Length: 183
Image (cartoon, rainbow, N blue to C red; front, side, top):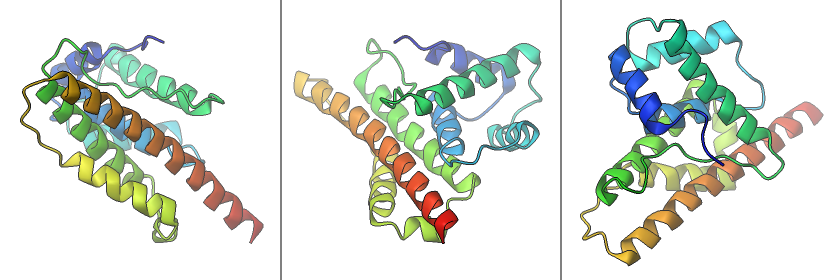
């Protein structure tokens, strides 16, 4: 399924705002912020996002791009089949740049989790702890590649691993929230 907001559209919007974050990092940040089961209020969400983008105040059109990106992530999280698709550069971009973007996506995601208050108790869950560790390792990946078919295949598998890791973190966080309610 094609994204409503493309990587280049979000990247262009962020550049116009003077943000230091890439489209991948911003998408990851939003995904992390939306990972907890209790949604943030709109005004808090906007203030938190704006603070982390470290940019000028977006105009209506720019907020529209940011909101559409957020809405799409929320919808993907709510799909029974967990349809989250990471917003990364197209396949026609050099593999090294796509790998860097994946690292930025993971950094953004982990930052987003921290912003919405993933707790020490949440991190005591073995699955969450392991996956957060894995994502932090991927966040710092740097690769020199000859862009072979094997490298391309490994990249695709790594993107899928990140997607499934986010799905599992989301699932585990819901379980942790349910157990808090029951106790």
